[in-house]
Image (cartoon, rainbow, N blue to C red; front, side, top):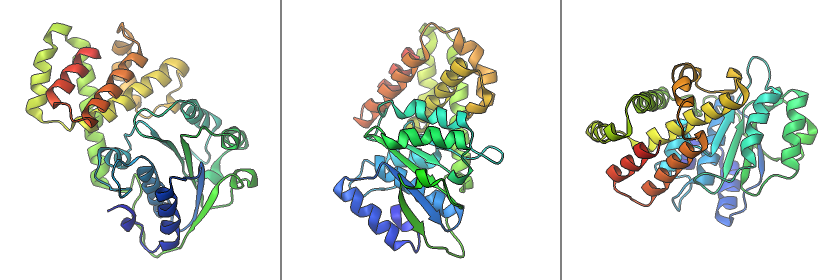
Length: 293
């Protein structure tokens, strides 16, 4: 588990492990060399290590590590080129979150794949943040071609050795992708039920979820991602900026009619995540969630 998955990259692993032990992570990294899948794996492992709750970081098994590998951690965002480039709006969506304190872990982590694809406008917007980033932000860039010198100069450059075959990054594991999709479907179904059921009937829903023995950590992370999409859509009405268009089309009209704000719902989800991390009874956590959404 952990760094052992990054095969043959001993120099890079040693550098990062030393920084983690010293508590001195850089505010920005640029992974170059190797295949994109291996750079993606390195980026994911660093994101896990930054927010891992175990002593040996990344452990790969704590709630934070699992959520990051599934792509549903609320403090970790990832963007990649749409078409041939990374657009200004994609970077702006990251920078909007970059000024907010982390929801759960000590760091907000922003992974930018194929950073050489940043348009000049997007690169300039990113550069402003890299010049004076908040102390809780870590930007991780990967690139298979040169990036702008001004971007490169503000990153710690870590070159991965080229290998014949490499591991998979966030999106390379079919099992993980299937599990992530399952959490998203569960979150969609739960929100659909909540829009139909009055408050007094939600106790039955708690019973149903208990019988299903849902992975509450995965469900909460997926719910938080959905509400993020709802907030982005409410603000911009730009489907290019949301991860889950289907949920916007199916659920947003009903969600928008709720009296509670999207922010209040997100705060309720984060509070349940906090309670679970303190080993609160699962049923009590479910009850708090369903009566506060």
